[in-house]
Image (tube, rainbow, N blue to C red):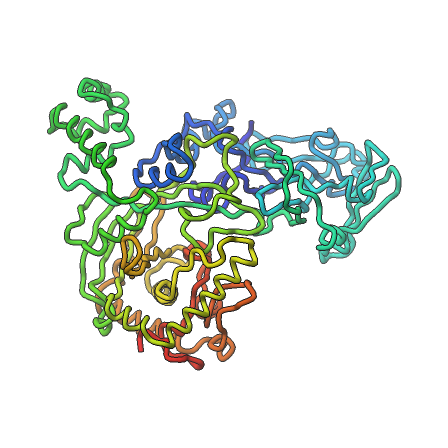
Length: 613
């Protein structure tokens, strides 16, 4: 095992998680399943609500959230130190010589792995037997850029032998090569040839939709082959954006305790949750070398008082009235009643007046001065993502690819701390707007687009999960304000995220109508306060006014303003585009769907649907 590079913990959740392909300087590698991870070097994260939500979905055996394993500081300059990190293997297994175009597998022995213990990024495969090198430095070998994937999450090497021989392979073993003509890299300019029987074929044939490949049902990250996959495999390129779609689940840390001891218990719950009696509490306080951080915190309390507080937290968790899969209801209850919210080192609210000039539309705003978010990776999909338009807790399990061979006992997670602004729309104003005939007609158009989108992706029932016009308004408002405030707050557009709270009065926990715009970083101190500074009534009112002015006219008008929700299943958007409403993927909860700037203000083609008229 050798170190090959570095990743941030948040990348393990959103970019390079289990089953994804990491493009290293000299090869491509796949992140292996949780069965191969060494949890001895993982730190446990505490978030009761998130664990309960995951247990509801994956089973009660899932009891822990772990940060990815982090290399020890003492191992930085010791090549003999144990290999600590996320395990990866070379994938795809087929490689190509950069000089003679020889195409072969890693296991064939044609290519040799050259390792550099001092420069992990220099680790690479070389072709030592290359006839064109003429005794010089052996040329490097690179991973081929063609793979097979299906919508059930399977991924496998491209079947080069079967492809070049069109299913009939008379020569085994065979000597293959892959030559590229021209500089475009187009598949029609790439020829695969078998030098044993002189048969060749162009790679353009691999993308023929009328001749799909049979899926072998391979899960390389689990070293598992599932038989009888009914989906057709499609040829994809190495590094394609549809090769891996994460399905994360996140929760904000909402403190429940109001007294000092209860808050300390919540902050140190990872260390204290397995305590069985008061004697074990007493023993923990004596183990200074391991629990020295707990001693100063609990020095003013007796062992019995600490044990009572531990029992009270366990009892409160068991008696929770909120369904475990409903992560947003407790957050909404705190944001809608901030005066009763408890504070902690990871959570602090400050109520301010509504944005100046928009008092008829908004309740009092909240400055979220401190916030902590824990994110866990449930699984992933390939080719198509079915989690862009719904909460992860209600996404069907049909195409959720597992992270382990058996039911997982833990999941990889990350935590971030930061700040934010919470805005809540007045319910009476919102209901009056929803009662307009023009708004109801627009809602029906979005409903038809939603049904077409699900039908095209074979998701049943077609009308399930429709969030309603209320969410379209909140989502469009969130994107408009995000695009405006990044000009002043100092954070990039990809650093500011949204969290939407939208439910009708007849839904559980409803009505809800609020948005949380926040930014967070993995640093223990969080962020610098640039976002909270924009939450004062005068400043926020000015930004809202500027955001709505920018929504009136788009650089793509009149085409953008005339666009209505599609009924062909390509998307679920109204009047919006990259020039006015779309945000980075890291910022948007809904995959840039359910957006329409005509619900905010009047546009060229507005039909009386503007809320901020």
